Image 1 (cartoon, rainbow, N blue to C red):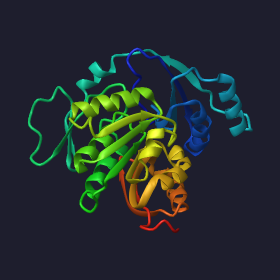
Image 2 (cartoon, rainbow, N blue to C red):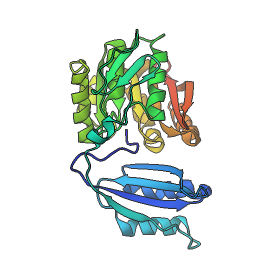
Image 3 (spheres, helix red, strand yellow):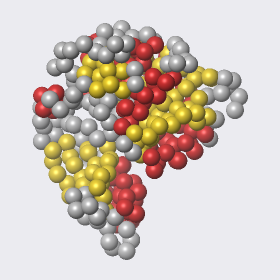
Image 4 (cartoon, helix red, strand yellow):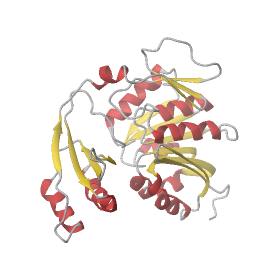
Length: 302
């Protein structure tokens, strides 16, 4: 997923942050998204404004950002961005001690430093915090795991796709839950590498095939389609843009789980997928992050 994530070891990243009034949040996010790999917002320290932060692998185009902000704020009151370079850190070593074991639905998630027994009947997911996003602690990942556990009560998919796989936690969860082959794709090659490594450590490496591509552009993703189950844990606007591709790659009668969207952005995602003939059947909100389940009609006709 392209949600806020720590930089890979040895890699410098760039940070852009601005403090804005709540009513200007959408405008500023739209200015940052073309230049950043992830965009997030939270309450600023003084509590009267929102801080919007973007993370980028490459140095942001300052002139392009300034032009976008001036266009969005024609009255001349555009917020001033602060651009910083984030030095590389050993995030794996630092985060191992900040990642306590946790249970989410049918899953028990823990790092390699945990040596106790998992809860009775739980599916164990071994995952160390590291160079790709997705430990289960984030509201969107937790929402996906919750919904996957619910789907297991009434579905037996034979093929699955994790689009925007991050650490591979959702691909591994699906492989363990249904003992099914899963294609895991991410725009970031590091995420695909980490996913393959984590799948092997969880004894499902033979079931999870990781690939790198933009959206549904991977030959592997196209070759394995259609899928009975697709998970997209990315961000609201990319999910909306991918709605047609998702519907095309989803098998008739199949289901998809969508997350990585703030509750306020759920409406545009729901509308985009309903236009593709998909039916919303479930949604949950955890810590302000909305997760959705859609189903495709059992016939191809819409």
